[in-house]
Structure formats: structure tokens, C-alpha cells
Length: 331
Image (cartoon, rainbow, N blue to C red):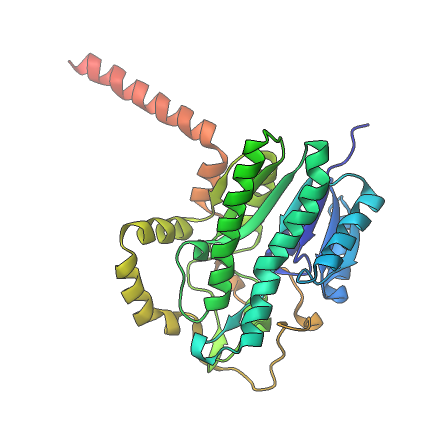
């Protein structure tokens, strides 16, 4: 009997990370779930097993290299060699840079950026000697086009992209069969908007269009099995990345004008007692979806086209052939 695929997912207690764990579980994988909050991990583990996978919960703060290394060792002791490592854990502060403390900025950077670095280190330490495995970085369109109120998060995503490109070239230099990919996400309906630290007057929200976490989760699974350098998820991500390449100064002006209002739910003030997960998990809010189900898209034509490039190419070729034949007959 073929060995089951072994997958490690960081940030697995909620949001996109939890959806990624579900997506691998549906394919029968053994999934090691890493996050700080045990309550969310327990719930994610039950869902993984209900979907056909096996789960191992490993409470881990990815900002601590030793904890990440210990989790990697535990995953292999329990399941065997790791085939796929997904770095999804993140933290953010919704605030103007001038209102963000050094401690807050450092923590968001340590979780989001260094968490991905430490996860990649732990994965490659095991994959490279075997010359097998894939690391998938869960990125964002914000890795190309930064927005106001999220300087720490945007900076971390930019850093992950640069770090990943560097590591990829080193793997290519050594002709390694280990692969590293990055999936750039659009706005997603996750609990982060209910548990992030915020210093803005109104409740944080993603900038529309919003997608359900299952959309990028399927792309992450696709990236784990296809040697794609990078994948952009959703038409809005493509538009933001391409527009920034063409007219970055225009986007600076546009985001300065609209970026504050578009990231807040107008008329829904934030309670001073609202808990946040920057330094400690918020167990009560651990879930796959956030509070924007009524506004979130469940599918993306752009994602379908990205994951079915051969079919698209065939359809285009067939269309050209038919058009050419008709044109000849007309002549």
C-alpha cells in the first residue's frame, strides 16, 4: 500500500491554514497541525479526521525557532518523512505606522516573516538530504502592493517573497528536486479580522472582492503537487500586482485616498475590551471562516483557469483552428 502523504501546516487553527488542512485531508493525507491555540487545533484535528485524513496537533509558536524544529521532529516521528510543508501562520496590527509600537511591529514580523523562515529551515533540513519535498509559502498580493494600516504585515509578505526567491535559486544551483513555491492571496474571509490587534476606530475588514478560504486552500494543494514558481489567486490579486507594476504612483495616491475607509466597517466601532491574538491566542474565535460569509465568493474563474492551463490552451487552440477553417471557407 502506498505511503500516505505527510503534510505540515502552520497557522492551522483557523482561517486559510485550517482550510488547507481540510483540503489535504480530503485527499487522505496525514496532517500535522501547528498553531498556538490548542482549542482551535483540537477542532481542526477533528475536522481533518472526519474528512479522511489523520491529524497530529502540535501547539507551536512559529516565532520560536526551537519550537518549530521540535514540531518538525515530532511530525516525522509520528507520521514519517514530511512531503509538504505549508507556511501560513501570520499576525498583523491594523494601525498607522506612527501608532504602532516597536514591540508590536517586531511581533508581527517574527510570526509572519520569521515564522516562514523557521518553517522553511525545518522543512529543508529534512527534505534536502532525501532530495524530495515541497515548501509552499502562503503569501499575498500585498507582497507586491502594500496598503496603509498594515505596514508590518505588508513588510513581512514582501520579505517572504524575497527570501523565497533567494532560497529557490540555491536549490536550483544544487539541482535539488526539492521545490519551493509561493501562493499570493487576495482578500479572504478569515477570523483574522475579528482577532487581530487594531488601533482603528471601526472593526477591520478585508477589501472587496473577498474569497472564502477554500479557494486559496485548493490552490495551495495544487502548488504542492505542481512545480509552479508562484501562483496568483483571484482576479483582484492579479489586478493589484499587475497595476502596481504599471502605475505604482497612481496606486499610492488611490490607496492614500481610499485605503483607510475601505479597511474598516463604517459605523461598527471596536470595543476597548476586544481581545487580540498578537501575543496570545484567542480560542473563542478559532474557525475556518470569518464574519463575511455573505460577501465572500466561493469560486474564482481565474483560479480555475490557472489550475487547468492545459485545458485552456487546448480550448484556445481549438478555437483558433475553427476560426481559421471558417475564414478559409468564407474566402
